[in-house]
Image 1 (cartoon, helix red, strand yellow):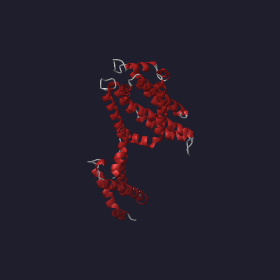
Image 2 (cartoon, rainbow, N blue to C red):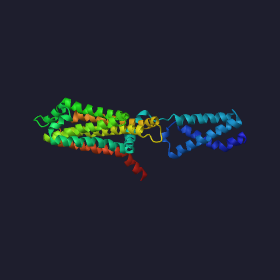
Image 3 (cartoon, one colour):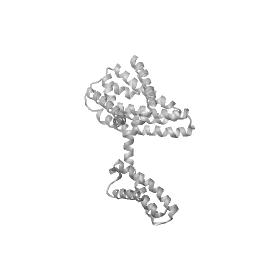
Image 4 (cartoon, rainbow, N blue to C red):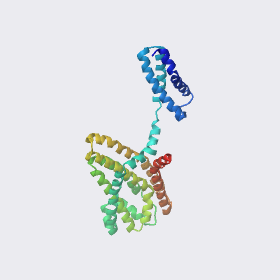
Length: 319
């Protein structure tokens, strides 16, 4: 094909891309309509082929120089448009994290179940006799629960509050990290800390402060317990990747599933922070027992809504 005919046959495509590039001088890709964007990408791909043809048959001609410049400018616009790190992080917490929870629901349920087993076991033993409580919970927590029944009804023990918050964060991080022990450490931590909550609840029942006890636990506990269960699930994922790597080698399985586990654990960080703020400011406040329980219920509903939001909007888009 002669160069003149090559230009005549394809100039309309080149002109289309050039017009699009001129538009980009005054507006961004986001402002392009879907047809405009599709036309831009299609023209770019076709012209890349034209450039290759021109280099082969026409050498370093003006046509080749023109096409090379056109492709270079288009390439810079396409591949320099990057999503900001902030947007990526925001997208992960708004969409990615809830999706990860759904994809790994089995591990989450297993993690929750281990904790609940511990709760039920220690609760029953402590309800039978409060003398069993020291086997599960430290003296300072026992004293904090007993104070709920005195005239000073506030959860005014800094030791108790600090113990609960730091213990829960520690449990979450260790439950994740101990997945490397084939899940033994993760399972132990979940069950043992279930013992703590169950025994504390049993002691509160015996001391006739059961409702007040939960009003001091649930406002921040809804988020904290959820985070512990997620971290436990992350630990179980690591354990499964070692015990049963499937078609992968154990190393490759650990690397592949380890990323998922890390993302799950990292997803709990903002929730742990929010729970800490609630515990520091709301839990010790003079809000009524009923008010605190309503707050806990609201936080549970919001948590469920947060986890379901990506799927709700996805379904609406399909409709």
